[in-house]
Amino acid sequence: MIERRDLFIGGEWIRPDGVRVIDVHSPATEAVIGSVPEGNSKDVDRAVVKACDALEGWMAVPAVERGVLLQKVSDELKARIDEVGYTICTEVGMPIKLATRIQAGSPVEIFSLYAKLSAEFDFESRDGNSVI
Image (cartoon, rainbow, N blue to C red; front, side, top):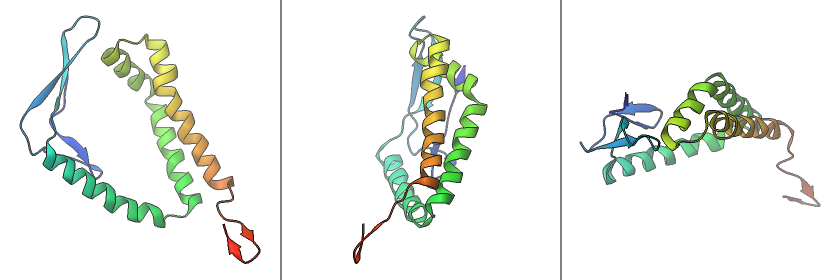
């Protein structure tokens, strides 16, 4: 059974403000297969502040460098595709092959696609005196 006690906020695992826990049930057996912390409004506020802070830095990163980072995300997801597929299968009751191929596999392909687009796409073009 997987038991999580922390929330991932701002790139790190932190203790939630609240103490309540949500049980995760198997859709096949209805048995408790894990638990996660129940975030509260203070946790949401912390996450929003961290996300806004991260956006400022992300906007300053050139598109080509963003693409490199997106490809790293794709590569890391691909390296853990079986684990992610199994987790999804267990949590939602989807057949393992479909969970791995679709639910875990699609994000791998999407991150990779956007990584390539960030290097190839012309984000700005000139139209007379204007940049569009």
